[in-house]
Length: 200
Image 1 (cartoon, rainbow, N blue to C red):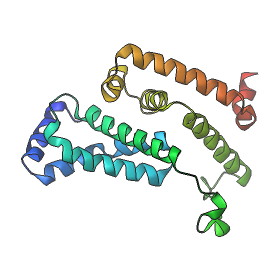
Image 2: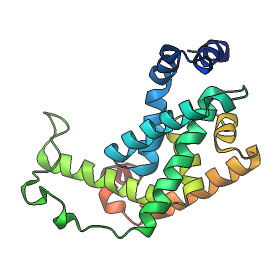
Image 3: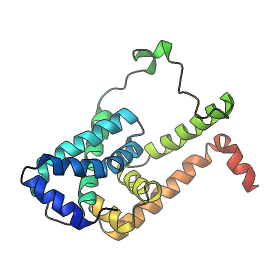
């Protein structure tokens, strides 16, 4: 696992114009950047664009980096970029799915597993969509906190540094986000029949 010292050497070299050093940072953190963007946006192409834009912005702002966790600094750029994208999309009218090119020939997602039946694949896809819909219904600050802590495994401190808030705020957002997710998913129990069956 990279240490802040390892990052600092690469950052200092990149600040002096060494593109290979910045590319090493990109390779080190591209999965984390994409993963957070994907969890927040719920769409792979948008997440890929958001992660790429974040690295471009990070490169442009690298001279502003003053130490601390590079990962937290980078993920703050990712989350801020995602927030901007979500605000823009709220103001822009949405296209109907039927109006999208290729919609008439879409055969759907490929089967997830050779052993899964088409019904199981459909149920899994519906359940994943329901989770993503509930996640998408959260306020952006709560969504980012839930994604980073529960889905990506960051510590309270890392989430606080990334979102630039106090630890108490992180815990409060996480609590509210979990409650909202629970309430949202309770309304979709039929999609999680196997899970709820075991609880009876």
